[in-house]
Image (cartoon, rainbow, N blue to C red; front, top):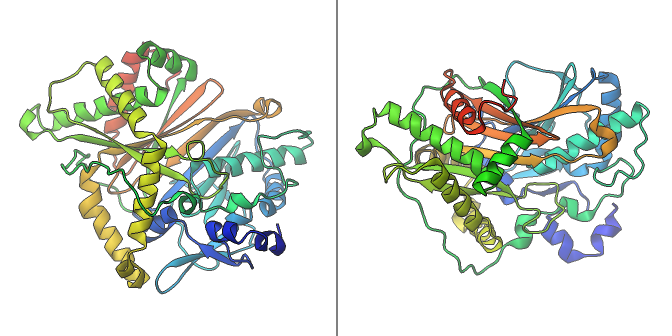
Length: 441
């Protein structure tokens, strides 16, 4: 892509938020929020890992990284702090591959010389950690798979016709740069989202010091969970969310010794990839969360009824017009004049305070499903599994993220509390639902 390509369509460059010299462009509305909120406690970093069936040659992987990076110029950036806002600026540095540390998803500081991602190798596992200002799970997965494909090309594998993976030789599509939120915003919005103003239950356990995360993976046969979801006539996400909800209800009842008057509602967030709902090729952020609100203080429902209610609620929320409303509302809020003129550091203080005092008490947790990874058949035999890890925070103490590859579904529980309170209950309920036969370990 060159300057003349950008100059041909002024409307496109405005929507994409790219300066013609490509040295600086705006953060999208999601990245703006993440940049204001992040610190050592709330890192806003997620990890995508791929475990190969052989030990990784780090030198060849480093060569693959150097080869593939020019294909992803929108990831070769840093955040430069301005007086009012942060800006993405070009950073052509090639990072050195790191060895794995004890704790994942560590804080990535901003600065002109700091890239917003890391590449980590541990024997046969390669992991990419991204700051959420850079991209979301789907964009990060594409970059990871392209790196793996280039690695095997260097090792002698033919990669002709791999249309599902972005290759080093492929021409860069202008709209991979796109700020898709900006394209889909509307000045006038008719839908009004119902506000859920009751305080929700969240785990009261004390948190670890900043930077200390605990991880545990649960492996499930994708076919077994798919068959069970078919029995209930719901999606896999709805089934696992219902188990999550039931687990939180049980934990809450134990804490309050089943005193119904003390129970609080359960509110769970579920991020959704918008690229197939609102069409976009963007490699930047383009996701939004839906919120599931259920009240265990009402008459206790059977699991079958609960999972059906969750399935119907999610189906009702995952609609194009409702996401356009969310996008428009968020951009309208960010463009309020008083917010613009407040200095960056003061904005950060206000947003973090809002997060702890206003956001945290109204959410119980988050479950994020990246879906099933699809790669060329020729590559499948070299890969064992994928993992998706979303860094927790003091506000959202335990999170569940999942991704599947072939018949292996991996659920990752990330936590900032020592006690594995959620995962223990969740695994027992998963055992009961699937009949103790699901590759659990």
